[in-house]
Image 1: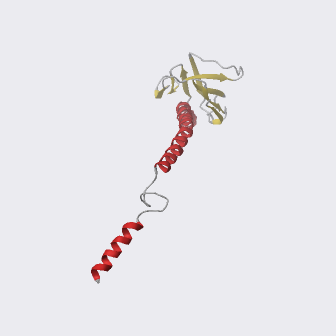
Image 2 (image 1 turned 120 degrees about the vertical axis):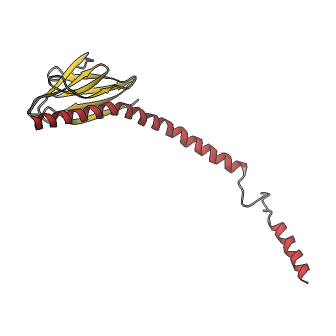
Image 3 (image 1 turned 90 degrees about the vertical axis):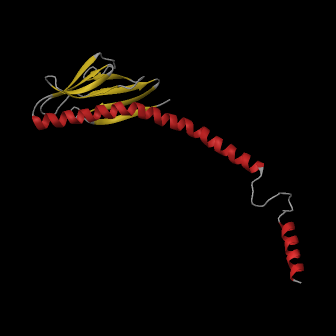
Length: 175
């Protein structure tokens, strides 16, 4: 009696593993399901790559701008604290923070492919100077400038205040 029931149970389970729709296994995936998931994944990656590329290009332009901003804050704070002038020397390949008189405190080289343009007050015309000295008086005041870092068609623009030497506003454009 016990053997007959075991046999019936085995026969019933063997036949229940097949689905009437013709699927071989209820727990697996069909090729169609796998292809659909792959198509969705490829589509999402296709949308994400341009976004990520834009973010990376934006960070390439923001890095030198953030360094210049940090130098400007340091120059102003040190000028006020020590009651002596500081300057940031902007050159085509980079910039450096120094005490007036020549002691260099920090330097920054622009990454490959990145350059900058400068607009100073009162001219407000953009240009690529060979050398420009951004002077911070011992009172902490400096000339207002605008700096545009460029790479290809993209740019990152910052406008610095004469009173604080800090970034007043900025604009990022990545085509």
